[in-house]
Length: 243
Image 1: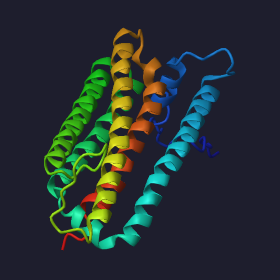
Image 2: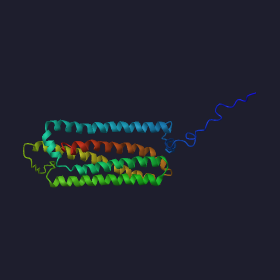
Image 3: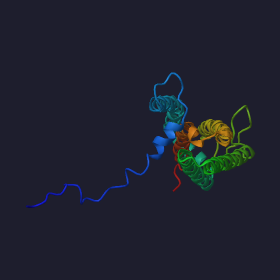
């Protein structure tokens, strides 16, 4: 008489899904749930939705500036080309790489917090702050250079434009947009860096750094948005007609 074996007896066991719970789920469970939420997941989804709605308003805010830039560039194309050439594209490239690297360190900070690694979390946040500081320092140097060249037509400051009066009006508009748009971007960076500084303290005193992972995830979205804004600003301001 033949014996019948269980159909799954000889099949290899997959341990990849049964070892531990996903890191993100365990981090979610460590986050304190406010009284008006039924679960940690509901709280997380609500917080993320709120952040995305906030970012939509930020997109609309910067969208107005980009729309103004587009209109003026159509009407003052030659002046915008000449004015863009006075900006140092290499400096802009370096700052772009600095911001992209800061996005990476921000991602690593969120990942470390979800895994409960306090030291790495704080280290990556500090690295993000340092990179943000480098970006702002380079940008401050650019501003100073433009002031010395008399290319800052704000607050009634004297404006000097060598190509001549034919394109001076358009050049003033370009530099006005340059200072306005990059200044707003820098302000958003300063706000983000201040919040990251608070997170360093909160992560240092937290009993379980995973409890800060949700806040860091939200902060990461904000930081990436600021970086994306710069990725649009860089070619629009620095790379016009570089042939």
